[in-house]
Length: 165
Image 1 (cartoon, rainbow, N blue to C red):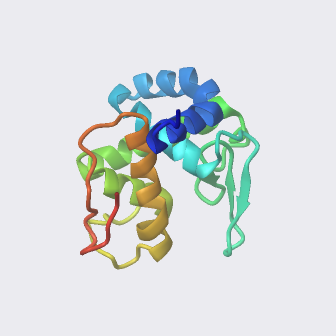
Image 2 (spheres, helix red, strand yellow):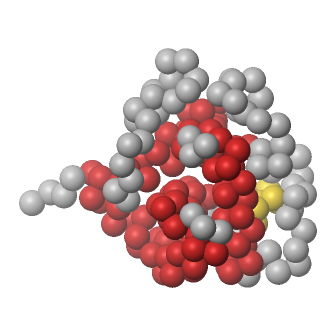
């Protein structure tokens, strides 16, 4: 019997990120955002696939590092590759985005991908948000959160007619 696509995706997410779930829960509890555990897990799956040694070089020469792919221009801690350190910075960053965007998953995911936690408010504007974020990153996060059982996800994003689900 074939499993639904969402069930297969949930199993893949658990396989790749499940070992980090206790640490995700710990950091989310630390920052008072336990209800956002699926968001953090979805971002981790999107960013590194659960690989603590992941590194991604950007066109501008900067490097995204670790489980949550934190950019070395903004996160200069020498222990950034340590999963606990990496996740702590990332969850603190996500908390700032939650506070800024009032829980709007589209804006939170866009802000995380674009490095806007300390920057200018995105405010549902297409200006300054790369097409890859709108067309691939955000829909991926929403799809992964849905597979993890998150309710009340947007069917549409806040960028005109772009579909997100």
